[in-house]
Length: 220
Image 1 (tube, helix red, strand yellow):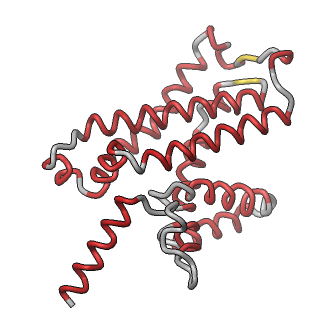
Image 2 (spheres, one colour; image 1 turned 180 degrees about the vertical axis):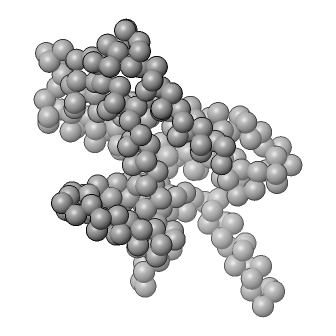
């Protein structure tokens, strides 16, 4: 909980710092040289390439020892520490990887906006949007955040741009009735695969799920 609160407070502190630092243009921000900025099509292909790279790294990470350590800490930090996993090292790795890709995507956003100001870089909306998209899509999955971004941004915000109250109700309904996120709900439909081709659960999660099922059958 303290980590989550700190994550929300950090952009506010960075916003105040950027607004008073002359090197970044203070509250006026900075303008990128138009000659060095690619056109809309170039920015689109760059964003698509970064998205594919981030998804591939996230998928590969769940199949490495470092990823297994992260998932073990997620499930039970005390038990993971008892087995020799260093929670601090694992958290630093997670922050380094996520921070690197967030900064890379921030560069793409800067190219798209051309003018970079503290408000549109460290605004609170960015943090809230990322959290909401991840929760709606499905926490702990690779494709979940992508599905959440599509649902939240395109299906709700853009299609219901003139109905903010209705979009809020739909968001609450999605979170309330799809506990595993939109992607998890789609994979749980009759005839669907429980792991959606391995993109919902990692090998570690699938093995843990099988062990839980065996324990339930043995006790019943």
